[in-house]
Image (cartoon, rainbow, N blue to C red; front, side, top):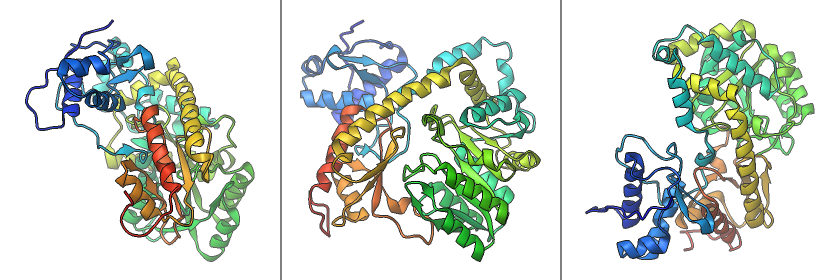
Length: 463
């Protein structure tokens, strides 16, 4: 269906292209524009509004970044599914930053499952009203069973009663550290790691020590040397498609880490947020040392960023300790959210989402390697949404990030990930998701490559 849509702009202080996007969001939210409606071409809308064609192009590009519409090349621009980019309330539209986002580690919004379908199915359930009630201590049994199903998919069979439920991986890490460790305890992690780890250990007064990572993951010899000098209470790791370096720890190193945990008596917190994307990954450390490991199995990076649910596979004797911490901190995770996730795990939605995301990852990785990776040194995993880009000696991270930002692209310097006491690498993380379409991603990658092709210099950005 094609509609001769003409937005009602009225008087506004915002840029004209954002006024067009606001009108588009309002008309989708109110039902004036149905999902699948073909919009006017850039030229047609520019002529109707008597504006420059570039203004309409800018508006459509911004709308696609937000998931309001999708482009199908010569076929035209179409209104996206009603689940994308809308609050459903007709409330004010908040435009995104003018900067291109290659910084945030998000899966592309356009590949998310259809929430509206799930909500309609759940609405027909006779028990749906019970989702507004408090749930029992430890959560509902069927939600723990769904968690055990997810953990088994990652490579370890567990009893549902060994599953604790938290509100995302970050919340899980905080609760694990807070319930197991005492102020001043030593926690070992990779020299570059998830920034939330550093926030948590600083807040709890823990002592972090960083270990080098190479293409095979964390270096066990360094871990053993630290254990010989210090009493290590816990090890935090992200062994499969490590964030930010993209390294995957080999099976031999995983077994070495598990053996060292047994020898020196520390616990292992294994964060596997990306594992489901990787075909035939090495075994989980938690499956090698189940009595000493806490497997953090979030779904946010795999299924949907806003799905704040995480299953933690605990040693059986420790699950109540983590449940007590979760109960004290947030009482319980929304049962409605968990009901949606349980439905998607059972009906195959998670499987189809993973297939879509894998295909999209492949397309974006191809773009990165064509534009950047074929000419500059970068560590990537072919199944991941990010790359660890090594900078040549004529660029520092601060100058390179500043130059990229001045040219409209956000990226993350190594300093954002470095563990306290470690020296940051001369590298940046480049992410491929964050609601960025292929044309926009190509433009951002060309910018990053162009900067590397020019000699770096001190002082202000060179544009």
